[in-house]
Length: 312
Image (cartoon, rainbow, N blue to C red; front, side, top):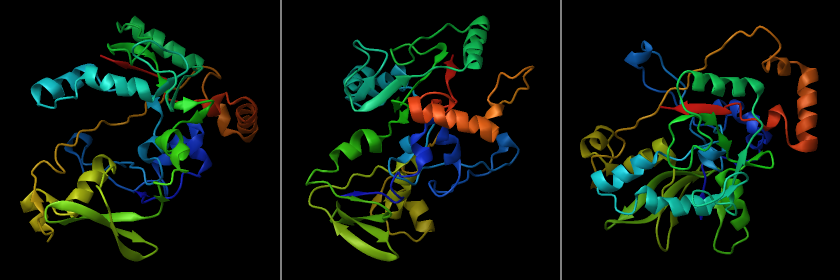
């Protein structure tokens, strides 16, 4: 069984690259907010976490950027995570990737995950040039080892449509006899007996059910959902679980700790001519963009908006 708390990925905006901006609110996220932060003057920020088939890959901005190779190497050498060096994980990156631009030892071209290069907006090109004038080197490929510099992002798209994990991996496998997908089924806890996970408790259609497994339970609920589910199951810091009257199954201090994330800050600039995308607020231009996308899979609807970036 594959269990998903949210609905199927049938919302049309999921599959349009530009549609991700509609995914930061509404029924396809959990509705989390951050705790007030002293660095942001005590304000609370929306913290979008997907509640839909495909998880974050169905609602994110589709920027295709692997982790920094040095981070993987540090996991292996400094933290004892054998098998997690960049050289160890690279074959899996390559195997997953169906890149329409890059090939060679760093990239795959026949994998299930669509990876594409877009047609950047003229202002995006100006941004990348400005970054070079500011001293950042041009980086043609952020996923070929060295990442420092500015350049154009590739996206997890194929033929102008989002290539989420649901699209790339799950849907081709739905016909298998050993896979049953169940959406709108929220796992409330992992059931542990004699030190072994024997199933999960779910809530579906207002009812609580126990689903037993023959082999193992794999938890893939994201940076918030996975530790939350473990703690609800009694796996986590004993003192914290006791505060919430949760029976301790396994005292594991690191669960639910050390989350790091970055802010998403919009910088709005006033232009001295019709260079931006404001015209697409008008119905006429929306119709033009929609027609271009429907006929050719191109244009502003095929853009993820976040077309370029830089690292230093």
